[in-house]
Amino acid sequence: MSFVGLAPSLAPPLAKVPLLLAHAMCTYYGLTPSTPMPKPEEQKRYEKPDIVGRTMHLQVALITASKWVCCGLALAEAAVILAQHFPSKISERVLSALLPSNGVSLQLTPSSLAACALGITGGIIRVWCFRTLGRNFTWSMSIQPEHKLGTSGPYAIVRHPSYTAWTVMMLGNFVLLLSKGSYVVEAGWLRRPLGKAVLTAVIGYMSFVTLTLTVNRARLEDGILKEEFGQEWEEWAKKTPYRLIPYIY
Image (tube, rainbow, N blue to C red; front, side):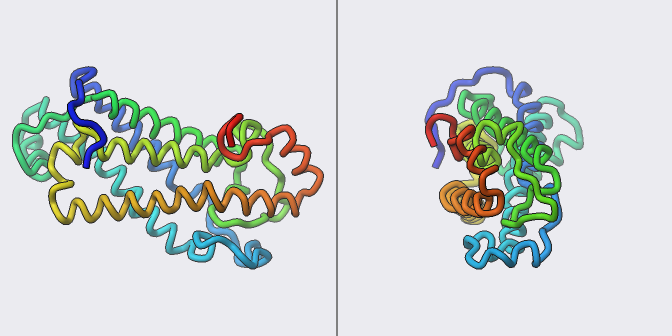
């Protein structure tokens, strides 16, 4: 169930701790709504929202649960590494609670380094998008009062950078969870029915959301913004012709 077989260590395990903490923090903020849910009257004009939009309250709850799993496992890995390197009574309790078997070595491997880099990068870009759009950034499709078309910052590079960032961030989380040398793999959680069920549910669900956002939601939002802003959107689309990936898509 892991992405790689033998994974060489790049550095002492302690070097992985700050990366895990930064990865968890960026994932947390990247998966946390930056504004309240829009009012019903701000959404009612869209008669055919996508499946995520129609069940947004449920989706927010499921995404929040998935966020806590991803962040919690990254923090657990950091805690185990620290406990292994700094023995104490507290360390013994941490290892007893989090590590079902002895002799587990959590390493900073090429795949885990890449995973943390993806998670951190994706989370930072997501927050950049939140701050660029301010109160106009909502998880539900809506047009706010005095809504302005966002065309600066990351929106000058692609039209839906938050979905690009979401994809990058989630890819980082998936690789971190399933890579050789990670806490999940080395501690054997994928060999346990409950652990396997939880990880399968989280990865399956978040993959579904990612596909919905990048394939369907981006297209729907383009149509809504084009209808709302007309010529302004047309000019922006000419300057920023790509939805998600510069020069590709």
